[in-house]
Amino acid sequence: MTFKELDTKEKIEHIWEYYRLRIFMIIFLVCVGISMIYTIFIKPHPDLYCGIAMYDQFISIADTEAMTNELNAKFNLDNREYTVDIQSFYTDQSDVMVEAELNQKFNTYIYASQFNILLSDKENTNTFISSEYVAPLSDYLTEDEIKAYDEKGLVEYSLDPYSNQTKPMAIKLQNSALLKKYNLYQDRDCYLSFVPMPEEYKENTIKTFKEFLNQ
Image (cartoon, rainbow, N blue to C red; front, side, top):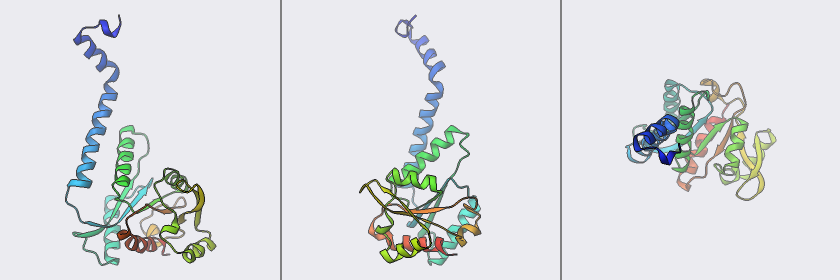
């Protein structure tokens, strides 16, 4: 018997039997999407000083709050009105639902311009570059600054998909005091890259970048 020959009840039972996991996944992703839209665009929150994404690195809620407060204090910010925002994207990849939620959240924040800085290992950083999530260092740092970092072996060169030219695209955070303090990326090299951003965020982002670079 073909699907067309089934009555309505049998068709519903057939769809439920074979597609219920897919249905649950779609419902889950729709709910996550609605939650993201509310959180980013509707829910009242402090003005953004600098958005930071820590990709593939676990950081506890307590440490996230502590690092946020530390950076806010360095920049003399009132975190009720103006704040650094730190978001962690970490999963052990054993839960498909959690993995999907994190990827959707990350992409939503990227396209909503809620991130200025991305932190991750070399492999993920190269994925960010090829996915056109980040801009060349030369958009934010001077030639002399890039040269100085390059002489220390900290500059990651890669193909810029926008220009199809090899450019300096990321900075390796070597012996970062801030990362050490919160035990972040201590088992592998961590790279920092810049997300394309409006002019108004550049000065704040560079100040935040230099805090991560401090040893």
